Image 1 (tube, rainbow, N blue to C red):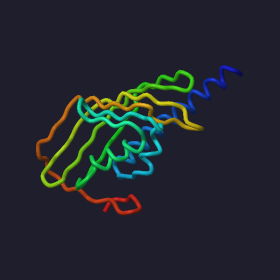
Image 2 (cartoon, rainbow, N blue to C red):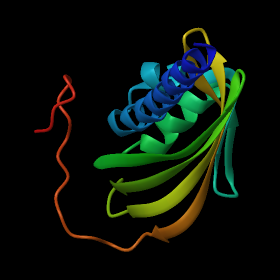
Image 3 (tube, rainbow, N blue to C red):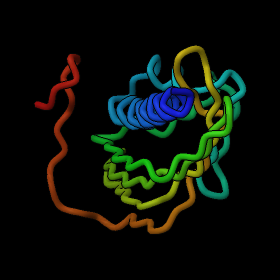
Image 4 (tube, rainbow, N blue to C red):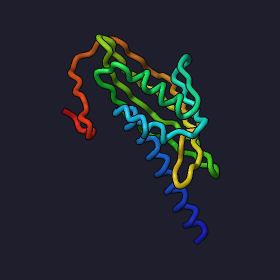
Length: 156
């Protein structure tokens, strides 16, 4: 019975961690500052490549706002990789693809790995550290049209 309880807890923790990763991608795509704030530990560290860094939920939201400023569109897809849980801490690698256009004729597409450290927070998990390492980056123009999201989050 104890083994079943431990397996159930592991399953619930992994589902909660995947939900945190999904909420990050959703918040980044929709520029939802409140949701983005909710996925961070108070002192959570956000690192993008070698040159972009912020610490603390409030600074991480400010960085999101800066990165999203003037974008015609932005979308992030996240695929959680292996999750390793050790008590109230966890690590995972998340495979990420992003595309964006704007402001103006600026283009951005990438594939990266997010190296994540999470900590238990109440019934869920939050990022203690999230570090994006680029695998591929393309800033050349691309074809297609971006469509703004309506306030309810649906596409135009």
